[in-house]
Amino acid sequence: MTTGRVLVLNCGSSSIKYQLVDVADGVALAKGLAERIGEPDGHLHHQGTDGEVVRDDPIPDHVSGMRAILASFEEAGPDLSRSDLSAVGHRVVHGGERFTNPTLIDDGVVDAVDDLATLAPLHNPANATGIRVARKVLPDLPHVAVFDTAFHHTLPLHASTYAVPPAWRADYGVRRYGFHGTSVAHVSREACRLLGREVDDCNLIVLHLGNGASATAIAGGRSIDTSMGLTPLEGLVMGTRSGDVDPAVIAYLQRVADLSAQDVDDQLNRDSGLLGLAGANDIREVNRRADAGSRDARLALDVYCYRLRKYVGAYYAALGRVDAIVFTAGIGENDAEVRARSLARLERLGVVIDPARNASSRRDARSISPDGADVAVLVVPTNEELEIARQALEVARA
Ligand code: ADP
Image 1 (cartoon, protein in one colour):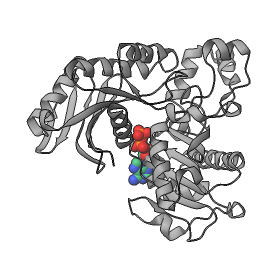
Image 2 (tube, rainbow, N blue to C red):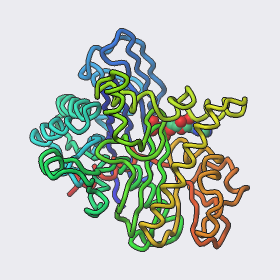
Image 3 (cartoon, rainbow, N blue to C red):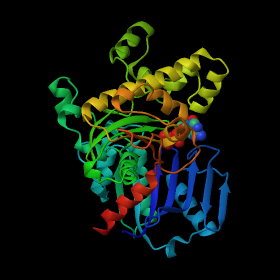
C-alpha cells in the first residue's frame, strides 16, 4: 500500500481549504480554512494535532492566506517540517481536453490551468493562483494538480459530443467534460469494495448530491456518461443551479426581460435550483419548509427527485446492466427521503430500498437495499481530499 503524507489544497477566489492527509490510513491529521480573503473580515480556522487556531484578521491576498496557514501549523501542529510531507495536491476544477490524469506541476502546467479559465472562469484562475502561491511558499515539494474533469476522459464520443455546429466543437471546445470526478473515483472504488467485486467487473450509477449535483454512469471503472457538461450547470437540480433547461431560455429572456446573456447565466448558476424554487438552497431548510406546508418547497423536492429518477432511468439504459446505485455527498449521504423518493417504484428494474436500512443513522459505507437485491443501493461517504492525496502521491512517487 502507498504510504505518505500530502497537503491537499483547494483554492477558491476568496478562500483556501486544506487538509494534511495520511494516505496509508486515510486520516486527516490537520484541516482548516482561510476565508474571505481580500475582504475586511478575513477568517482562519485550523484544527491541528495540538489544538485549534481561530483568527479573525484581514487576509489581504492568497500569499498572506498561505503564510497564515503555515503559521497555524507551527502554532497548533503538526510541524510540517517533521511531517514527512511527500507532496502538495491541488484540486483543479477544469482540465479541458489536455489534462486527463493527475499531473506534476511545472510553470507550463500552471499557465495551462490559467488558460482554461475560458471554460471555468469562476474556478480555474483561483486554482492557478493557489498553485503559484503554494509553490512559492513550499518550493521543495512536488506539486500535483488533480482535475475534477479527468475521471470523465473516458466518455465515449457519442456521450461527450453535443449536436452543435462544427466550429463550436473544433474551435471552442464545446463538448461535455463532466465534473465531480475525484469524488466519483473515490466512491466508485469504495462501492466495488463493498460489493466484493473487481472494479473492472462493476457497472454503477453514482449520484453525487451536494451543493452541486451530478449523476455518472460507470462501466467497469470507466465513466461512460455524466450529467454535467461543458460547465457544472447541466443535469440535476442543485442548490442554486438549474440543471437542465431549454438553452433557448437564454435568448428568450434577453428578448422579453431585457437581461444580458451574462445576467441569465449568473441567475441560472446562482439564483436557480432549490433556491429558485423554494427560497433556500440548503435541503434541510427546504425539508423544514415543506413539512410546514410550503407548496414551493414541496414542488422543489418533487422536481429534485423527479430529475434524479430520469437520470437513473437514462443511465440504466446506457449501461444495460447495473450492479449498484450509489448515493454520496451531503444530500446523498444524509437525506433518506430523497433516496427513497428518487428510486421509488423501480422494482421492475430490480431497484428496491429497504426502509429500515435507509433510515439508519449509520455514517459508514453501507447497503440500503435488501440482501440479494438485483441492484444494490449503496450509501458511500465521499472523501475528495483523500482521493486527491492518493493521486498526488502516486504521481509524486512515479
Ligand atoms: P459541497 O458540494 O459544497 O461539498 P456538501 O456535499 O457538503 O456540499 O452538501 C451540501 C448539501 O448537503 C446541502 O444541501 C445540505 O443541506 C445537505 N446536507 C448536509 N447535511 C445534511 C443532513 N444531515 N441531512 C440532510 N441534508 C444534509
